[in-house]
Amino acid sequence: MIASAESEPVPGHGAAAHQWYLLIDCETYRITGDDLENEKHGQPLPVRLRNTVAHELTHVLAFRANEFGVELPRLFKSAKSKRDFVYLIEKQTEKLSPLLLFTDGFLDRLFAPSKAKTSLEDLCSAMHSTGVSRYVLINRLNLVALSDTKGFWSRPSLNNLAVGIGEWLSQEEAIFKTWPVYSKFDAGRVPEFVLKLERGAQVPPKSIFADTGFSLCGGTSDSTESQVVLSWKSVARSNLALESQVQNSCSWSNQPLRLHRKKLTSRLGCAGLRSVED
Image (cartoon, rainbow, N blue to C red):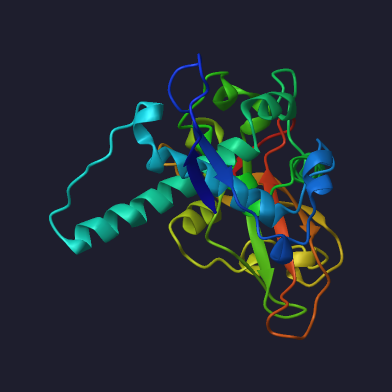
């Protein structure tokens, strides 16, 4: 929770100073003052706590908008319009908080200009180092297009890449989650199943990948190469060579509330990329 206070003016130093306070429930998060003091890159605080703190800090924009050059409406025509405004503030706060957790400086190192492509291992390592969840990571990648002061959008390691999240329904049946999804492919050459996911359609992995040894199809391998349908408005439907990888986040449990989740990254190999007519 965020709180604010006006301190007493100091003689000879002008008016009273305004201060913000962030209140953390140490019983919920089980942390101490030493934990806060000792946090560092590669040794972050729990993911949920970091996301909550970033969210609350971003709310400062709404509480004291004028301090940040933002002007918010003061009057509302109805209770509904006020509720809509509060909902919009919450929604925009969720968009801004990943910027605090995953900075441009870290993006610059992760997607260096000289780097040709991004691996799933790179993304998992980045999540561990910065203490962010899969959702925050993917949302942060999508924010690059909204504020790109360093030219990330044109870098090879962020192109020909799709990143999303999957979920096991049983030991043999998996689905892709329709949100969040990051994708960027050269000249709009996007795999058809990625577009379907972005539009909210359910896409069973077994309808995409023919490799029965791939873990999303009931096998044990965490990677596969396959031909997938390409959706490209300027040409006839064709197939595209695609490399896909998954990463386990926990073990399967038969308990309904403990579903096995996997993160999926599908990327085009810059070398040997080819499409053929159906």
